[in-house]
Length: 398
Image: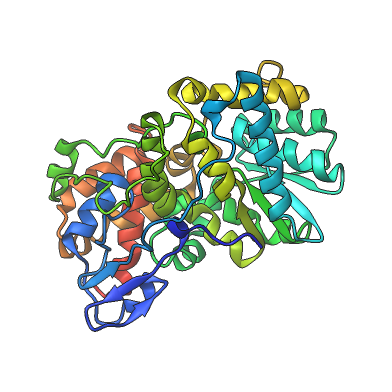
């Protein structure tokens, strides 16, 4: 199987010299690191070498030895660049395929449909496209349309509102104590999808790798102050220098890959890998190197990807099947309508001493939880981070 890229490999080092690949390995006798808590609430992940545990460091795997792109996109015409991108994508899919039964995670968006189109071009109907979402997710209908137009078998898993809550514990364990409910919805499908295929191809990070998505900003400084934590630090502390051929327009992609994509987005797939072999196709070194050399024109709104669709996958060209935007699983709606979620949020408000033991201000935490519980403010992302801390508080006996 395709090796896991360095930014997705996790290693931790304790002050006493112990090493491990899961933060949970260091839980016995540990305490929370206030800076790690602040980073998590600000960005959704610790920054640099800091972790959630005092005395435990996140070890960077060091420089990523990527080879220069061949051909370099600047030497190609517009048409040739689109052709080269298609060829590199098909090569990446071909290198990843080693399972008897192949599946492709299909959300209906541009990145997953690109991987699906490449896989269909190589395997025809000898694969399965797989989609999950809650009943209100716009992705479901669009994914069905893409699957029909690719003439590929398609399985759809409609998630209950409690899906993230039902799998939260397993995701927390699979991610080494870093993933919360925002990482959990797709895990609900693991057991059923394992009956359909052995290998799942994912288009994760495509909006970064060949698009112009920037790092999301931190939680507002005023909110962090109210919670009683330190201001947000620079999230790219400790990120290795990009390869020399990386264009100015692609530096943000490199920084994003080493931070949010590696430490947050990857959490959503780690639990799935316990059941199915999952390959993040777009992290393929040859494909990634080519994309790191793209200029801003090709990246803007994934312009080169759209040109690739028009030439090589016209059946699912976004001009024909428009992309969608919206949550695959609406945690905000789930948290304010599901009785199970209501009970969980009530329980979190019933133990203010635990928030105080973590260095947070219980009144501010309680206000956020009430707003989300009552449907007054969409802050499920922040609640997901608080749930990670909530799990640690019980594990550490706070």
